[in-house]
Image 1 (cartoon, rainbow, N blue to C red):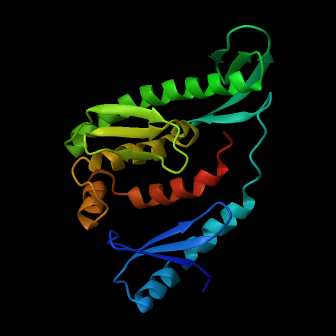
Image 2 (cartoon, rainbow, N blue to C red):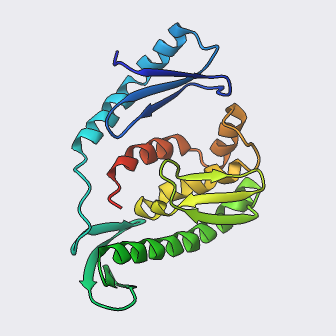
Length: 221
């Protein structure tokens, strides 16, 4: 059995595995969890652990921000074409080419992020219109952010916050986050009732959840 860091919490009700981009393994458990149950849980997850570690080992270092960089836009790939010139930055998509013009790298990055944020908001609205009737709840507000450790969250006031980098993952994984956060409008926790609700809306949610977790280390922006 691989070495792991054990994190106990009074608030946690289920056992959870986390693998960092560096390959470190953490097991999050309730304070009352028995060691034998924890070890059995980790042992049962061994195939997934091995697959994930293998994928992490195959992930190349993030590509540098440069002309010719290939970027994902949901299920499409676009090629970044950078032009450095004086004046206000601009971003324009022409087919599978993303034209970014700016005075230097910093404003070019900022302009590209803003373009992705706007695209994320537009796509999120469309997918919420699709999923909200299935869940039976709709958010009061949608916010697009740049969270470092979360793909999305749902506040007690009904605001769903989404990471703009969801535009850099396949569309079905963006859908998973939308459905996940909408279900939090019904159940503001991760107890079994929440997962049952999510399974009702998205029966294959577990495969999507694991795929999204694996892909996080591959993002290049």
